[in-house]
Image (cartoon, rainbow, N blue to C red; front, side, top):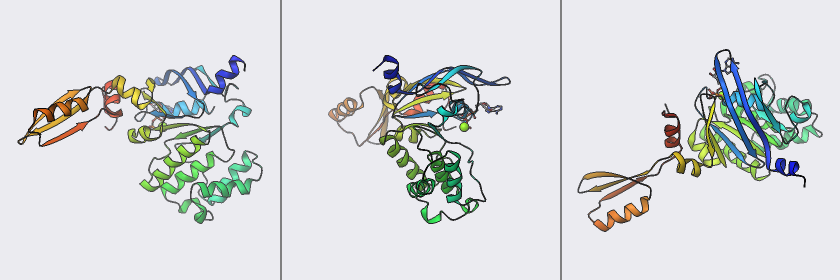
Length: 290
Ligand SMILES: Nc1ncnc2c1ncn2[C@@H]1O[C@H](COP(=O)(O)OP(=O)(O)OP(=O)(O)O)[C@@H](O)[C@H]1O
Ligand SMILES: [Mg+2]
């Protein structure tokens, strides 16, 4: 295999020095990122961090002020041939309220020139568990059902790279779990997925790697474990003896708990491991939950 082919069989997406401003607002700055083929990559950041702007540049909906986007080694998404490999579930749902779920999916399938469009639509309705409601107009759907259909619409043409912009925003726990399971299932079938969220628990649960974004900048990238090791700080061990609580910060909570039990008299122990919240706080000085 040539070096170039080898590089791109590993990277589904390469972003180099992306910049995008809206007037005086710097939406995305200095963004460089390589997304591995087959991974679920999470963009984790608060409102206004630049997540949707990044997604829009990856899909070619927005042109970067500078920098490059390369999909599959084929180049920029301004080319229709490149865009065929991308599937987008946008943050703002882009389905037709007056069409049924079936009609909506059929519309997108035909737009992409999908062969056997009707069969594909049935497959997707089953995937997102909406077969029973497939003939109902979108206007009659709940928020979670609309999200699931939005997700299905991104898949009509079986894209290699799936971009999910806040796919669980405003959905009930059941739809949320269905969507999270689907993301992992699609990744196990070989799709590459970029997933934006401001829910740390979701990012920790389903992403192979996470990029922490704030103020248009990618502050760090890694697995959750790597990020926590780098920025999460120490574990906190709270020990209670005869109604008196003490707290110890440590890098080795197991050793600390063992040591405390050896001293004796312990009535309760609670260990708090560092998590993504701590990582975000360390990187930005702010809490993501605020
Ligand atoms: N079309 C636009 N015109 C002007 N400013 C914009 C536009 N799109 C985004 N911005 C600004 O760029 C910054 C990044 O916005 P973006 O939508 O990318 O953030 P986000 O991380 O997706 O946030 P959210 O979690 O709220 O969806 C924000 O300050 C936003 O106000
Ligand atoms: Mg957004």
